[in-house]
Image 1 (tube, rainbow, N blue to C red):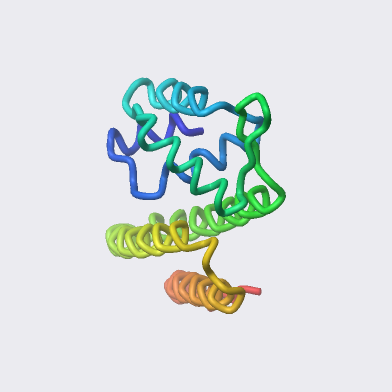
Image 2 (cartoon, rainbow, N blue to C red; image 1 turned 90 degrees about the horizontal axis):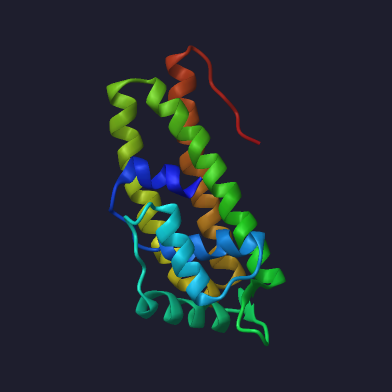
Length: 169
């Protein structure tokens, strides 16, 4: 999964990716910081070599946010809150993937719109990931409503091109 992503994007790692990489990896089993670094190098075929200066402070922030916990043997694992956050990220990724598939089928216009949407989502994702622990329930709800509204717009554009309007529940 991750190695396929690196083959598509090359050496550019988007801001905030490391955070999602760690959450995704820890969904499977607990790891030490060194194991996380080694796995990143292995999965990227040596393209991405996150330094301890990136990984350990990030692990500290994830600990502070209550998304992970450290066991006595130095391994990090997801907390219940971390597992829920990882599931939410998976849901958003699935929605975005479906929408991008639709946009890419629309040809050049769809590609242009898809790139624009990706940039907006990437920016928003970075902001959300760095502020997630400090967000109120109301702020989280507003971001969710905004994303759902934008996805509805994209589906309606596609539906109109096919001669029908699609409703999202």
